[in-house]
Length: 374
Image 1 (cartoon, rainbow, N blue to C red):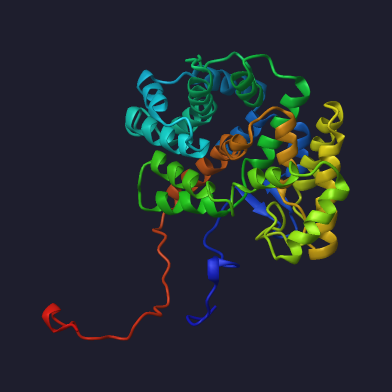
Image 2 (spheres, rainbow, N blue to C red):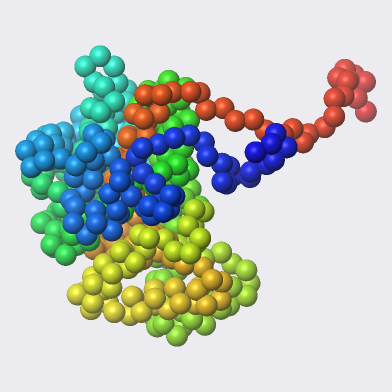
């Protein structure tokens, strides 16, 4: 690499080392600390994966039980945070609610003596679903819900808070697999944002707040919302086929396809696609899956683009009764594990992240006093 080379968007630039995950490098595919994503998504609980990312090993039975107990005990929200959530507008985007909730919790329970990074990570992991659901129910139903549940799984906890009842087992299993798939993805935009903030020696909450703000953008975390808005427009696969050809002819962007890192396929996509097909069939919503699959086929045929994780997760989440505006917050519920692992790793061998830029503005020019300007 020479000083004259430019890499817009830092594409292809190796910005540091990580032992947390690999995204298609060294022939390893996507793995978390050496474990294949396909094995983890098929067999692991999300809590096992979060533990793996944070503590660098899979937990034993006693360790997992203790970890889940700690998370269950930390699901309650401080009264002051509930007040903050009640003051947020009913029409706020749920990602803004999580961003504000994270920042507010940082002022109420600051990192420092008696509360290290791992403890903050566990607290945020435990409270994010409650933050969102408390705000949601207060403004939609006028209810001040209790955010603690005895649901052992993170997936089941969120679905119970959201729907106010024990979740269907198929929905819980799908969401558990989805959380595993979303938990970590190397130096993606939101993770890199968290590491940049951490590199300044800022606090843990500030780094996570930076990550949430980055994930909010539709080019990163909001693609599943846009994907479902597209899918839900069509009542048949043929209608979707015709409409997609028109969109492509007008050069409109179709969200949920392609990936900055993967060139031929997203290894997570087929895993969530199988869940989407299974849930749609169980709910009698086969047309929803047929429409999704036809859009997939058109994009492959016409543009040689493949679906990423966001595309099929959209219909799976919809069938599970998750509001479209909450799709990206579910991403947060999972990715807080990966973000936290990266913040801890950044701190362990820190160097301030500060790239340079080529200046392309005006040449040097003299200042002209205001009374002399025409």
